[in-house]
Length: 326
Image 1 (cartoon, rainbow, N blue to C red):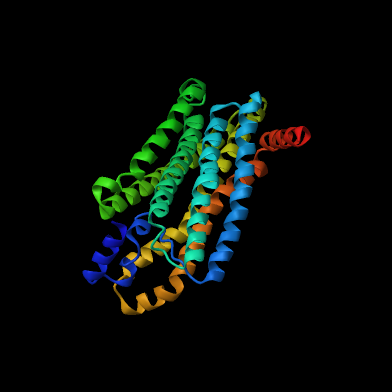
Image 2: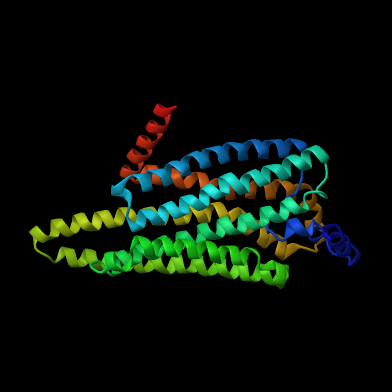
């Protein structure tokens, strides 16, 4: 079926950009083969990223759930993000490597259809869950400052777990939507979902900034004794909010190459000059965009360790206990 789809596209006179294997194209990440040297380099980089991400995110999840002091709704949200990143490391990246190795050994993309579809679904599920969890983290920070006294009763651990589970269910549903909507409709729905999440994060960050500025003006008008306590509370909130900002913009930075590349292809496909460029440089561009996409799962744990002292100490303790047992 996959080969017939590719042949039918060629018979209809589609451009080079659209003649790629349909099973691999639907995933937005076209697995261009490229020269053997490129495939080997990409495989080596992804092995390193997969191992680093797998170990780091496992430590994050273990540290949060084994340390009572870290078992707060905000930290549980971080563990949800770490779970999505761990899934990328142990499922999506090995599938990507399997496809690349198969292409390298057989010098053909024709036999990678099934793996390509599984990989595409996995990428959409895991990265969709990551994006929605990052959006939930931004909402959590807004609720924390908007409803200061009511926050503990509004945002609870059971509700956070429910929200994370819902994120995975929605991501799974959207990832299989192409089966009955067609690729074009599927792509539009996916891009709209991404735009909604990113726009919501931007609006949330803007509202947080305005509320923080207003609170600072109020603090300056209070007496000195009360001012110190409020300053301390505001400093803690600023730290956690900056963490949420860093996670969001790190994700945006890692997704940008793929978004730009897809936009360029959508804009210039059909042009003979572009197809000539794409034939030789497309594999490099796609593989670099995939590396950046996977890199996000490795960078998030570094942000946690850098910004959260309690998390850093808990991860060190977890690692020491594992090494001592061995």
